[in-house]
Image (cartoon, rainbow, N blue to C red):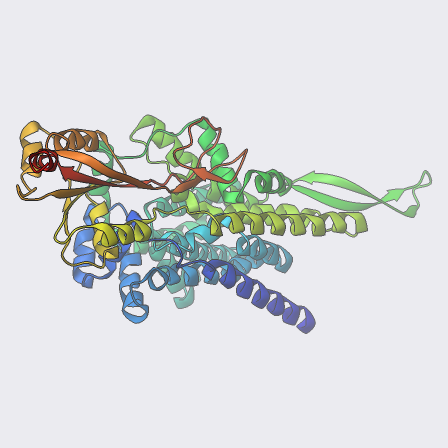
Length: 544
């Protein structure tokens, strides 16, 4: 027992070190994109303003409050802001082991921790100054406390109220409140817990009277602590229903979600069958001779685990954050976005780990298959992450603003479309004399009078005018047409981003035309357009 514990700890330490290296590698190379700049803008505010501003966002303010303290210690550079997600992502590895151990076994816990260590999807969002790595961490913590609560329910069937010891009360309530305050889609994980309790009570009716009191008290306590945010959540839901930027998902989006979870199409072709294999147990049984005397030969039978409550729990954990938003996106305002479903990632990996464990039999050939599977998954994960490290996926604001700082005339006016991109310009520009003028948001109709109001910002003596275009809409074209009445185009420089896709190559330039089956993580080019006033041409003709 002691030897196994030491070996488990050693393997976990190796996985944590590898996971930390993979998540920290290349973390500060690319520029902060617009969503990360939003995190930065919130983090530098006082805490009371972070909370006050949260109602205008679609996410709770917990991550921004933590980032506020983190950035005060480690700075607001790319590495300083993103390193918090690196820590959250690395910390999730041993905690997923604990969850897998509590649910199934030490071995399945280690398999799940290994899958998370090399998870391309998790590594990417552990390198972003956004809340997704934090969401995965708190969801795992919340499920650990939920599983331990259920274990107490099984052990104490005669005195249910004694389940509410101080440890159980604090661990479940605190972790669940953290989940609810982490991300909008994390609500579906708590919903999955409640659906499981209903199914569990229905299938084990003799235990219903022993569990409903403690569960109701726990949910009431969670509701009371979540109440301050509930009315803001309702306001946010109503706001999203009026208008939101996400497009309606297709049936291919669900397949794309599985591919994203796996990291690539090739990895999905391995992990998805493992998730299916999780519902099958290969059992070893002795063969019987004609005289009913047990022989030394062995045979293997397949048992389908349809009623295993642990697998049902994982299935609900996967289904609720994925299928429910998908259905809501078709009957109401679309809200389905693949990275929002990341609270379901740990359940997906636990199912895959359970399926891999089914291969771990006493047959040497099956263990060889298991080892080869892990080696192949590791190679695919390293390939996918290597492609990310060598591809420019985020908008190259640092490079674009360096170009502007070098070439802009003193006191130049710079129009910026879309309006929120002006914050990226202010963050990366090293010149204080440049004046960045954001274009009003798209929700304000660009009428001729508003267009003239924007254009009046251009001084009559201004000989040069810069126009930065990213996240372009139709308004950008209309503004360009108005500018070109008085200015002529001098330079149009594009700083391309890339986006990942499957089936052919991993990355390619955004301006490449074509239709592809699955496309993920679309980022935007940055155009730096320089205009020169037209009267220069007439003046030049007068002096000839």
